[in-house]
Length: 277
Ligand code: DGL
Image 1 (cartoon, rainbow, N blue to C red):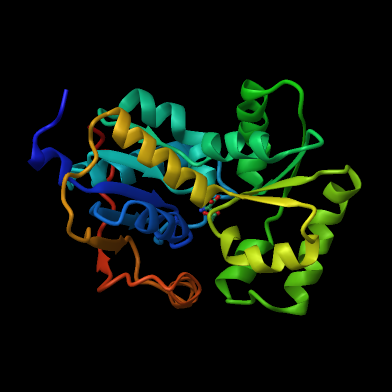
Image 2 (cartoon, helix red, strand yellow):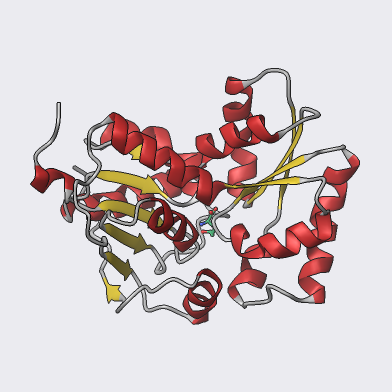
């Protein structure tokens, strides 16, 4: 069944704990240029990466509800921590299709590996949740997964230290143990990490395939819209609206420059507590 035109002009709602999810928006804009996108970053409560599951679930439900109040036709959880900890709650609670970043990343990693050894990096909450291991094992039981939390990479990226000796040392510190395990594929399991892609590629070399959750999530959203008949029929450029729950800091400029993304005027929203539809 084809939904009415008004329905398919509804925006794709995208949320993240903060600004890092703009990496997913950038990939969505490239792949689905005619779709309207409403992005909501929970900058008032970032980071989610060290918080407990009940807290991440509550925050995610509140932010997603705000996007639904803006008539979002689907919700993209452009945050690895929220995808790892809150996706089941979001799926059982919300009335629109939900897409996270973990499963698309897991699928891409299984396709990319040649020797069956996959490394995953992310926030402490993402890694401790075991969500990537579960997703990868649900696709293939033949692969071995080694994971490592990299809590210091997010602040370095937010400071804009994308090409810096200290960042390189930190990458070595976190990734050398994974390399010793013989991984040939690395999942960048945090929204911020695609901004460090050039540094990862330079340090790890061409033998290690980098799986970027932003690009794979965007492809999965395209497939979801097609499957649900929710893709826009418009041929004009989609509109991107970016809202945050607290005024932006320096990281917005870092992300905007690195992604070459025009985010327009940033709007501020107050978190609507406890309103889940
Ligand atoms: N957006 C988070 C993620 O992708 C990173 C920042 C945070 O800890 O909230 O896991």
